[in-house]
Image 1 (tube, rainbow, N blue to C red):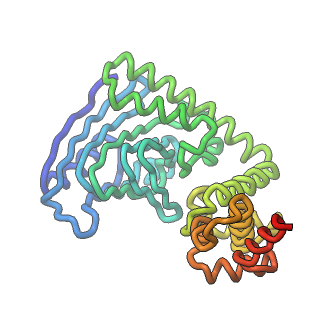
Image 2: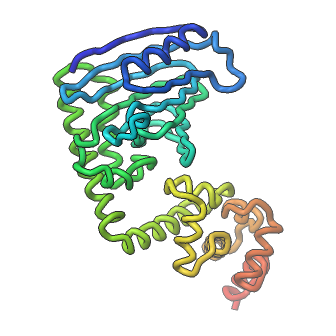
Length: 319
C-alpha cells in the first residue's frame, strides 16, 4: 500500500480545493462540494488521506466538519460498470441518489455503484472511510453485485464481520496490515455477494418469500415505534414503497391493515401479561399515536376497546 495524497484544508477556498483533490485523485468526473443549508462555508475544516492498495483499490480516510458532496464517477460518464464504492462512517451520514435514500448509522457501511451520481451529506463532524475497488475483485459479474447495492451492510448475513474488518482501518495504519485487512475484506464481500445473489437471482420465488418475511419481521420488531411507516420499511429494504405493497399483496396483505393488526395483537398481549396495567400507557408503548386511534383499531379487530378487553380478562380471572 502506498500513500497517494494527504491534504488538510480550511474555509471556503479549502472546500473548493477539497473537491479538486477528490476529482483529480479518485477518478470522479464530476464533484460538487457544498455545506449543508444554513452553514457558513468559511467554517469548513477537513483532512483527507488517500492510500492505494497493490490491487489498485483506493482507501480514503476523511475527517471534516459538516459537508455535502455530490459525486459522479468516470465509470458513469463512460457508461462502464467496472467499479464499486464501499462507504463506512463513524457517525450518521445521509447518502442519496435519484432513486435511493439511505442513512448510514455509526459503524455501518453501504455498497454503491460507481456509475451512479449520488450525494453524501453529514450535518456534524465527519469521520469516514471510502473504498473504491474493481468489481472483479469480489465477483465475475456485475449482476451478482446488484442485490447488495444500496443496502446497509449491518443487515447482511456477515454484516457484523464485514464492518468489524473495515473498522480495523481506523486504528491500524501499517502497510502490511492494511494489505492483509483489505484481502480479508474483499474475501468477505465476495462471499456475501455469492450468498445474497443466490437468493435474489437464482431463486426469485424464494427471494420474494424472503422479502415478505423480512418486511413482516421488520414491522414486528419495530411495532413499538409510532413512526414506522410504508416509507421506513421501503428505506430499510432499499426498495420502493410500491414494491413493499406488491410483496405484501402477493400474500393477500395490505400494509396498514397488517400494521394495525400487529399493534393490536401486541397491545392485547401486554394487557394479558399485566392485567392491572395502565391501559393508556400500554397503548402508547404499543406504538399508537393516540388512544382514539387505538380504541378504533382495537375494536375493529377484536370487537372491544382496550379498556373493555382488560375488564373482560379481569372477569375471567375472578370467575
